[in-house]
Image: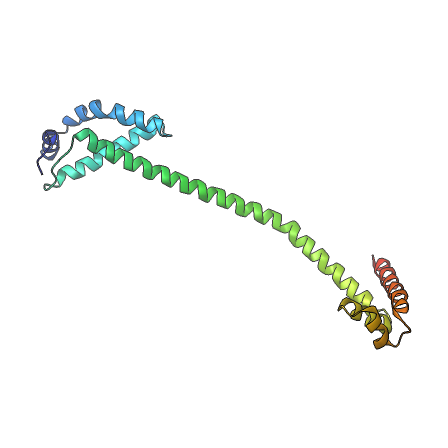
Length: 186
């Protein structure tokens, strides 16, 4: 590939003539500054990115096999653009992590009421179980059968009751007794 006419700037940098950098700054810094500000940046960001690009350019100049094949401004712009986009991605990731952490702590703070509700439900369930154990053997058998889906007629046969109406009356009496025992504990 043939060297671009701006290769003399690279050669000057290789030779240690850094006064050429004044011209590079004057010619290219305003373009970079304008582009970065248009792309969610600030003046300070543009200065930092341009400085990093000059350092990268200096490193390229020190590589004796490097030959500039495009205008120097295009190379500087490409370096700055890549550095700025990487910085924006990094900021985006940091924002995502910050948001994730906020959500995590928000979730943890809502976890306490949920755990308290679970604990209250477990206490209520233990009280209901304790009250159920205080019911007569017939009430416990009847309620177990009905809860497990056995029909009223079948429950009447299994428990030796006259008919389904007797099962309903007995069920209501058992549930009423269970409710009374539970309310007495509170």
